[in-house]
Amino acid sequence: MQKFSKKSSLVLTLCILSAISSSGYAAEKDSLHQYNLDEYVVTATRTALTQKEVPQSVEVITKADIQNVGAISVRDVLKTATNLHIDDGGGGHGDQFTIRGSVTNDILILVNGRRIAGENIYPNGSSNTRILDRLNLSNVERIEIVRGPGGALYGSDAQGGVINIITKKSEKPEFIIGMTSGSREMSNYYHLDTGRDNKFSAVLDANFSKLRNFEGKAAGFTYGPKQSYTLDMDYDMDTKNRLNLVLDYDKENLQYQGTRSISQRIQNRKTAALTYEGESTNSKYSLTSTYSQFENETNNKKYKFWNCRSP
Image (cartoon, rainbow, N blue to C red):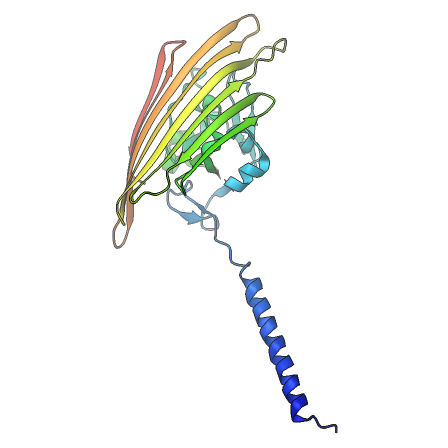
């Protein structure tokens, strides 16, 4: 049997230890990429649960998904969702939604879990039909879609499902100017984030859009300018109590191209929402009060909505 010298044994030992150390480091390094945080949703139960814990079918469209799609409107993003179909009415009769065969009247659209005022196009129609035209995509953080009955939490207008559009919160001081353009619409948007200054933070978003006029095309579309403004402010009273105030305003001055004539459509909406969130030793609680008013200046009609809820 061949004998190893002390020097050879030392070299062999060092080689083995180096291999073990390298493999252990490689394994440790690789393991860092295997731990991903679960996606939390709040729409299905009004409490933060992971998608695995939610008893209903839920789809989350993240900020990264929105950027990858290259969409210029919330409608474009929702068209990528599973089992959700949108029939674009071109602005004439609004959009028609279908989730698993349900109709527009049974699908509820929320913004940050809050209802917003809209108008009914037909006597028995839904106020959802034109909401997508008035949402600012540049201010959207993610979209949660709950497929299936949600009437127990949100009422009879959520029998087919719920679409909750969640806007951006303050992250860091920044100011962004952007522009988007598509075949039908072009927009300029502005985003101002103050960052957190001690206990206060605020986000201001503004969007100016224009629907193109397709001269010589078939009737049944709208065109003209739109604008929207959103101010979202947070104030930390202490480590366990916080106030949030959201002020939202949007206005549109559109022309509708009918089969025989052109009609004007001037509309504006104002929304104010105040939320208090608190935390005790054993529980968390919140109270939200929302007032929203939609005014159709063309037909001299007003639609008002007021709600106070505690999830």
